[in-house]
Length: 131
Image (cartoon, rainbow, N blue to C red; front, side):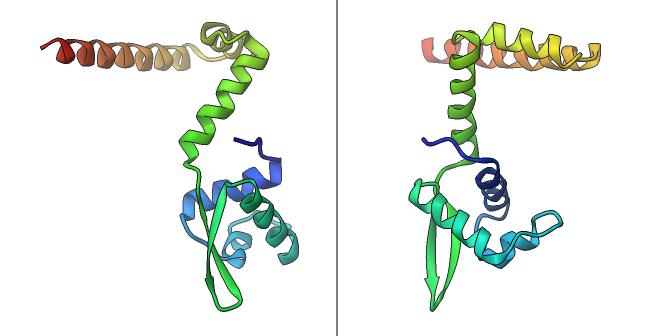
């Protein structure tokens, strides 16, 4: 999966939210100052070439939709970050963000709870497979 530029990512987030959109719909959801129609149209066509977006034609208009799920792209993106910057170590990556972002005690507690929930879910799945 190809990495997205900032502009491509912004458009993909809009398409993931809307699920289907014409170029003007995408522009309407963008912050001011709004980019030119041709600019957004060009970026959407690049996203098509990258295999991220498909379209359905309505005469001369095209309605665009994501071909890649947001979670799938995020997973690949984060795996690349973890590999490139943290030696493929999730604990190193989490530690980095905990230190660099000055997480509050509440935020660290929330992360701990999420990890415990995931551990319980995996243990439950493991137990159900044995039965």
